[in-house]
Image: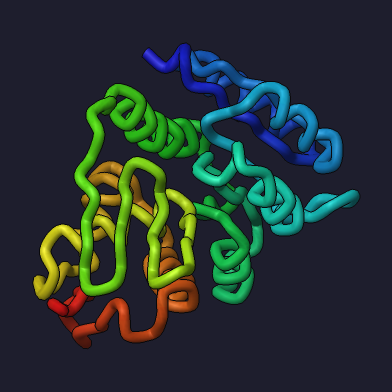
Length: 230
């Protein structure tokens, strides 16, 4: 079922790579591993994985720096990048998400739970691969949102957002004025079977506002988020 989904695991601990790789392969995933954060860049560029799992604490280049480096290449703008980390404090989680991560997985984690999380992302990827029809361009005021290019034009400026940020914008823009709860956003963007960290949506919203303006998305305290009708 998952033979066409490529997963790259980067961690400086061989035993973790061996356990996680073995269990993913058992469920049909195509898996490559690397103990070197530096060498993993060329491996990723040549192999083009759908999902990349990075340890944060690595000797040559930490996972957060590696994530930023990967995101600087166009081919990795929309690849799922997950962090596998033993550091569970809020600061580390926020920094990981602020620098391009889609989600974080806290160690220790059982192989079964790890595989389940990867499967959830893989199913979303397969759904997107099989969705080939062109989507309608959305215009709200002077914002032009093109779901086919992941671009948002505002005046003379064109913003190309990472996949999750763009999907949040498209969801909210689908019904201007409607307030979407956090649960609705999680369900539509991440899927019901994916459990993401509590900080994930807050970080994504902050990044969207930084790019598109503080007034673009309105927070309705205790309810959710909306794009105002213009």
